[in-house]
Amino acid sequence: MKMEEDRTSSVREGEGARPLLLPSTPGEVTNTLIHYYRGELGRMTSWRDRIDRTSNWAITVVAALLSVSLSTPTSHHGVLLFGMMLVTLLLMIEARRYRFFDIYRARIRQIERYYFAQILAPEVGTGGEWAMVIARSLRKPRFLLSYQEAMHRRLKRNYGWMYFILLLAWCLKISTPKLQTEGIPALQAQSWAYVIDNAVLGPVPGFAVIAIVVAFYLGMLGFALRPDRDEGEFGHGEAHV
Image (tube, rainbow, N blue to C red; front, side, top):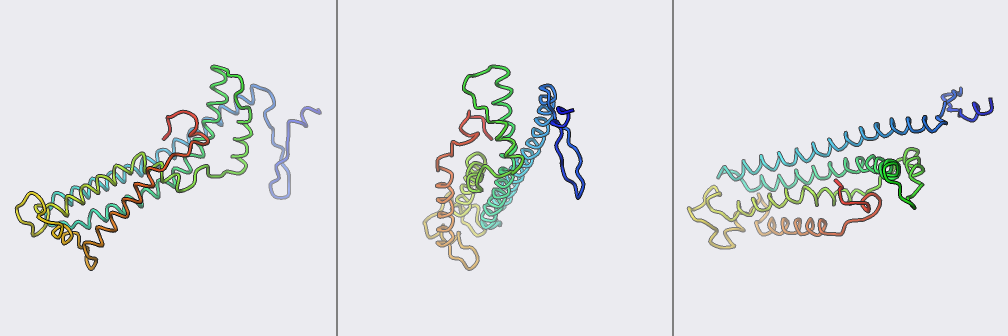
């Protein structure tokens, strides 16, 4: 009777209390852990699919705008600038999704590294606080990555190449007369003044547009090249999304 009382705890719902039966034997604990692992793996996979979906949207946007801008001489170079803005928006959305994905990925890796790996090949001195780490995360979920760190990782892995392609296309658009509406049949721009004139965006002079684009890309380059934070799961192995 005493053992039965120790196995139960009370969970209040409204004014009443209902008993919650907790696993007590090693077999019950293992079975519960397996089901929990499957559930967390499903949530992690779901958020990973959302991340991939956002990346696919960004790739589709870049491909569509490149096709419109470079295949049509009458298209304005502002289409590519608009593409840079859209890619930035998608990067921000993906960074938010990546932060949620990282929560579930960290829980999964705790179980894999400190439980399953120990079953397959036990190691002395392996941390035994993994269950407490997961319990704290379940009781009080919190983000393990800052928003800036999440953006840095997605920019470095995927979006940097998209920005680079858009920049090359934009430079080609404003510097190649054949791609301009009133261009002459030449292979390249005759002078910097020609490039600056082609970079005009409405009332904004071409020099200001070029300066803004250069400043934007220098900022992105510095942001992408900053060192990674080798903490938490990122300090174990190299296979990280």
